Image (cartoon, rainbow, N blue to C red; front, side, top):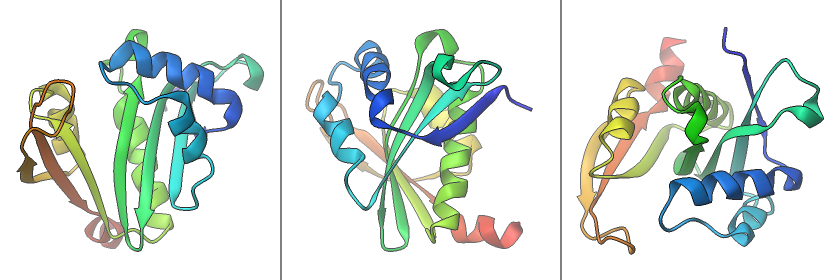
Length: 160
């Protein structure tokens, strides 16, 4: 059993999320983007905390931002603190996000990922996402292509 817990993001988490974001991405989301994610009705944001400490002492070690549109969930952003990478945190977080999406009525999950991000692509494939297309020059900082991936959550729901 992982020593982590996934909980909805709160305004108190934003500073930690933004710090992780800035350490990971060349074109990070600004603080206002995360503040807005907490307001939008279709937004679902989560953080991962390490268990075993008092809640106020549990630092954010990962986060995810998703948007629900009718019966589809779009995974917009995922970040894991650099000292927690390659420990299964991202897979745990995404799996919990997909479980939440299924409970919210999502039938499909979509995402875009940098074509060069082979570790993330491998993780998404391991979690059941499949490649459905490419968005040329998608990322404004590098003009790199994005790969579009989908996971059928309805199939997963039927398997449960």
